[in-house]
Image 1: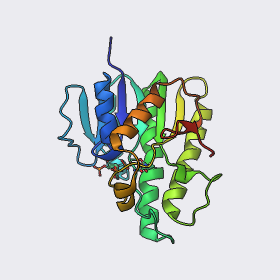
Image 2: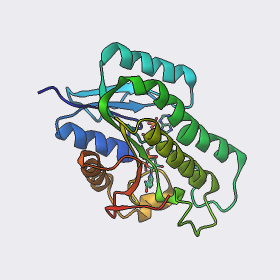
Image 3: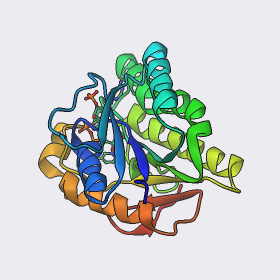
Image 4: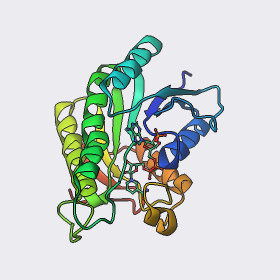
Length: 225
Ligand SMILES: NC(=O)c1ccc[n+]([C@@H]2O[C@H](COP(=O)([O-])OP(=O)(O)OC[C@H]3O[C@@H](n4cnc5c(N)ncnc54)[C@H](OP(=O)(O)O)[C@@H]3O)[C@@H](O)[C@H]2O)c1
């Protein structure tokens, strides 16, 4: 049987890296992106590293062309690349705001749109969001750009789920509080290893999930938008 193909952005480290290894071990063909295009720590015949800086149109176009040349279809897209430069910061600053929106929102939208034609008819798109983007449950005063960027990507998830209600399945997934380099506090206080988070995300991806859902993969429950 042909391997299923998954595209994972931000596969060089953290959750994207662990998820790449998990999906390779489950028999997927994995296309993993990083800005350098080199991910030396994953040496596997079913792994294709490609260069992508999601903030640069030229880089997005190049990555798209490579994908169109090499693949007839992709079964899943996992939009995982993300930054959190104002995490835990009380007030917003313009540099963090611009860079966070460039990666977490603008980058995700304009990387995903032209790829939709490549997605197989029963394909799925997972946005690695965060429960910090939940408007309904927010009681915190901090991380303005990060929280707002994840709320925006939640809205994009809903829009895509509405647009493709008859074939693709689209979901926003909170990966849990994970020990990664996204912030100093996550590195120290994260409850999950990237490997544990990857297991949970994989379980969700393989499940019979409802399109348009916002899912907490650490708790295994639905989240409030
Ligand atoms: N860690 C947590 O507790 C937590 C909680 C909730 C949600 N999340 C979300 O989970 C996702 C993964 O985060 P992580 O914790 O694994 O962080 P991480 O270890 O810092 O990894 C971030 C990934 O994003 C990529 N990236 C950064 N800027 C990019 C750009 N301009 N273009 C393309 N790729 C870029 C990085 O690739 P390069 O090699 O190119 O730098 C890296 O692979 C993010 O969307 C984050 O918001 C994390």
